[in-house]
Each structure stands twice: as C-alpha cells, then as structure tokens.
Amino acid sequence: MTVYLKTDCAVLNRVSSRTNVRRNKSLIAAIQLSTQQLSQIILFRFTLQPQQFYMNQILIVDDEKAIRKTLTEILSFEGYKIDEAADGEEGLRSFKDKTYDVVLCDIKMPKLDGLEFLQKATEHNPDVPVIMISGHGNIETAVEAVKKGAYDFIQKPPDLNRLLITIRNAKERNNLVSEAKSLKRKVSKVEEMIGESDAMQKIKNTIEKVAPTEARILITGDNGVGKELVARWLHEKSSRVSGQLVEVNCAAIPSELIESELFGHEKGSFTSAIKQRIGKFEQANGGTLFLDEIGDMSLSAQAKVLRALQEGRVTRVGGDKEISVDVRVIAATNKDLLKEVEEKKFRLDLYHRLGVILIHVPSLNERREDVSLLINKFLTDICNDYGIAKKIMADDAVKLLEQYNWTGNVRELRNVVERLIILSGKSITKEDIKNYVMPKM
Image (cartoon, rainbow, N blue to C red; front, side):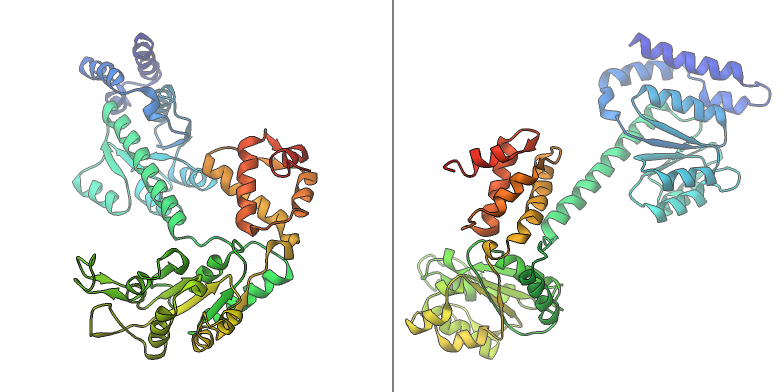
C-alpha cells in the first residue's frame, strides 16, 4: 500500500518540478492530486485487486508530454503496457501497426484532432474501445464523440478512480464482445471440408454445382465419413442459407414417434400429446430438411414423406388440415437403398424422389492421402478447445496412422487424435501411436 502511494506522489512531484508553473497552470491542476483523491486511491486499491486491471496494451494519444508521462507511469504501475503518441497522425499509425486493448485520446491536438482520430480508428478496427480525455470538453463534444464511436468521455483533470474503472470496464466489455463473436462462430460456422484427394475434389465440385439449385440430394457413405458435413455445405451454398437447416436422425427416433417428429401432432391426438407440436417439415419451411439415416425410416412414414415431397403439403398427426411447406430435402444413408428396395424395406418411388442428385462420400481408407491433412486440422482444433499449445506429430507417427485400418472413418481419426493429445507428451511420437492406438502391434 505504501509503495503505491509513494510512487504516485513521486510521479506527480517529478512532473510538477519539470513543468513551468506560469505557462502550465492548467496542466498542473490536471495532474496534482488532492488529499481526498489520494485517500480515494487507498480505498480503491483495497477494494479492487490489481489483476482485475491487467491489460496487454494501451495507447495514449495526447500532445501534452507531461500528461502522457503521468498517465504512462501511473498505468504502468497498474500492470499495463503503454505506447505513447504526440499527435493524432502518430497515434493513428501506431493504432494500425499494433493491436491495442484500449486507447486514451485527447481531443485538441495538432495535425489530426481527437475526433478525426476516433473516426479513422473505428473505421480501421471498431472493436477497440477509445476513451476520449479533454480539458476543452462540453456536453456537445461528449455527445459527438460517443456518436462517432467513443466508449466514454472523461474531462481533464481526470479522476484517477474513474479513469481506472473506465479502462477496466472497457476491457471487460471488449472481452464479452470477443467471447460472443467466438461463440457465434462456433455455433454458426460450417467446418471446412478437409481433403485434396480426387474423391474429395469431386464432392466439392458437385456441391458447387448443385447447391444453388432446388434439386433433392441423396448422400451415401459409411458411418463417420462426413455425410452431415456435406449436407451442411449444400445448405450453406444454397439460396436457402437464410432459412433453417433442420436435421433429423431417423435412426434415433422410435418408429411410433417418427411421424409426429416429422409432421407434428395436434393436442390429444394420442395419449402423451398434451399440447400441439410443430413438425420438422414446418420448422424447415423456407429452408432445408436433412433426413439422416433415412434407410431406417418405417414404410408408413416413408409414404407420408413421399406425399410431402410430391404435393408440398403435410398433415399433423391427429389433424385434418393440410399445411403447405416449402422445403428442400437432403437425405443420407449408410445403407444400400436399392438392396433395401429388393427386400421390401424401402420404397422405390421414394428412392427416385430423393435421389435426383447422388453424392457418395468415400471411406477414409479410400482416401489415405487426406489423413495427414485431417490430423493437422484436428491437432489445431482440439488443442484450441483445451486451451493448450498445439502439439506436433512426428512424421513417422503420421505415416503409421496413414496405414491404419479406419473402420470408423474420420470420426474415429478425430477420437484417436484427441486421445493422443491427452496421453502423449509435448509431441506425439511413433511410440505413442503403438502404445495408445495399436497396442497389439
């Protein structure tokens, strides 16, 4: 506590002794602390811990050197890293060259004033909060600064408690904005399709051609190859991207409930129907409906799906009203549907309705040249999720995984990479592969 108080007084005394009193009366008033302010700092330091203010980088833009020096020494003591700029142009160059957490900016400056700096800075990076500090301020100036994107406006001489709290709040707001953007990306972003093999290039080319159309698509392939990812990219590149992509796993829904899930039901239509339910077809209206594992759908549900595709209308279970729906259907299966047709387990007419475009996703064993690319992607993603530095996999370890029999395809590879990240050391070696992936070899 004593160290902080002595440091602040020493800073202010040094600034005062270097300053010509006659020419800088207003400056001295701006940087001198009253006894009341010092007591506020003492209380402030007890109530808020220093680490709450920690910030990587602050840019101070002010044409008065003494003000810059004072703020730099005080904020450096608080744990911040400070850059200084003597005018708006120098400040703007620094702002564009580095990434700052907060900017403190004067208004009246030569070359480029504070409001012009604010406008250009927010155009370059609107996410960095800019706090305006000025001794020439009034309500109109403050309003104009906020309208142009300033986080806050503080008059000189600044109250240090308010300044430190404002900096902390600006940083916390920025953190919340960054977290919100990150979460939004995680929720909405479609994962990249990794692969440079001929088979993957063919799939990507097909997606580019058919996604903008309204053609129905049937995706085939083994479990874990990435059929769902193909469906998401078809939706992402379609004209229906502003609508919903509604996914239904037909294999996970009991046969007696599949019709209610797809078409909805009216209240009281069966024992547990205590309220009306909107089906997936209605939810996907204007968007895309992805029917995964459609080969596991019951024959009665297949008949209703066929009717919905033919007429563009559905009827809820227990209801008699026909509801028009505008839905593009993408289906996927790991079964041979033509064989299912021969065994009377799948309707041939529904197969032809769904299979306007056929896309087959190859197994990982059929595109081993993509294994190393997938490993690198999973190493990056999983280490980021765990908040650790990316681990490196040795070349001989990668070669070993390229020869492995991937019965679970891409899904199995991701699980294996995650296991290796958890159990291995700083890097993943060939011995780790033998110990944790192929223990019987």
